[in-house]
Image (cartoon, rainbow, N blue to C red):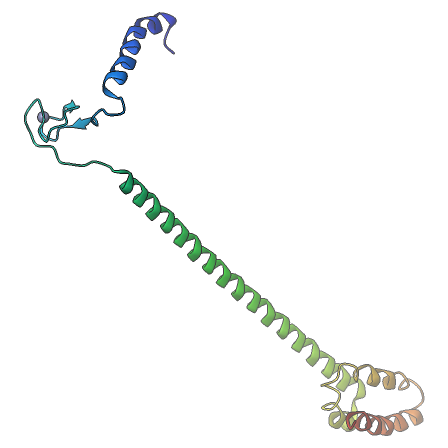
Length: 175
Ligand SMILES: [Zn+2]
C-alpha cells in the first residue's frame, strides 16, 4: 500500500528504532513499564514513575510464573483430553451394548420365528409336545424339516412319520 517514497521517508525513523533497542533493550536493561497514574512508558528501575512520581505496582513476570502458567495450561488440556476420551469410550461402550442387545433381540426373534415355523410345519397336537425339546438345539431344527418333506406323500406315510418323530427326538436329547 505505501508508495516507495513513503518507505524512503520512514526509513530514518526505523533507523532510530534499532539504536533505541540497542540502548534500552539490551540484556541488562530494565523492563518497559507503564505508569498506572499517568500511563506514560518509562524504563525507570525505581519504585516510582519519573514523570509523576506515582508508585509502580510490581508486576514482573518471572520465568517461574511463565513455566507455572504453561504447566497449568498443559495440565488443563490433558484433563480435558482425558475427560473427552473417557466420555467417548463410554459412548462407544453404550453403542456396542445397544448393538449387542439389538443383535440378541434379532436372534431371539429369529429363533421364535423358526420355532413357530417348525410348530406349523409339524402341526397336530404331537408337534406341540415335541417343540420344547428341539428349541435348545440349532441342529435339531433341520430334522423336522426332513420329516415334513414326506408329508406331501400319501396320508398313510404321514402317520408313521408323526409317530417316528417323537421317538427320534427324545432319543437324541437323552444322551
Ligand atoms: Zn507517572
